[in-house]
Length: 178
Image 1 (spheres, rainbow, N blue to C red):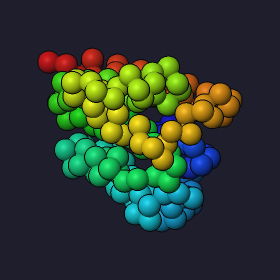
Image 2: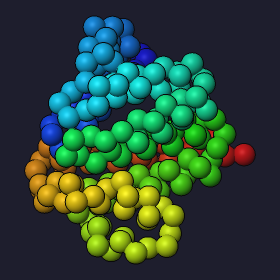
Image 3: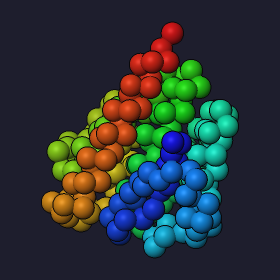
Image 4: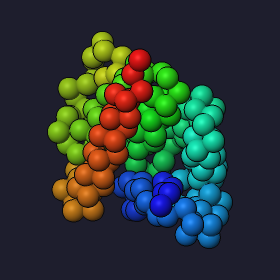
């Protein structure tokens, strides 16, 4: 059975991923691709769906451009880092293994900031490019209270799901290495 990744706002804290069979997605997909959830920019769902569609068509470079645009969009009171996994996946599928692995490293560090394992203060003056990008993405004043709420089971489940998606993308990068 083929599956499609649909992104939906799970709470004001995070964007969650639902895996549902493609055959059952027509109605749900049309809702998600046209109606932004609370706190999402108006064109966020459409850009995300465009990126997913391009990836399914094997247009990995164009898909990567769309995922990067999604990642630049501000999400109200929530860090925008989940699509890093999708970006890494299409980078690896498109043969850009080094970029894919760097994106996975950025995602992994962002997830650790999100779950409180890494504190923003430790990233503040780092010289490493990945650490600087994570600080910029995850450590704004607006998000400072978000990481105090990470103890909830919903957020822990979200992080677990993202960890599984990270592992799948990492395996894909390994398989596509020359």
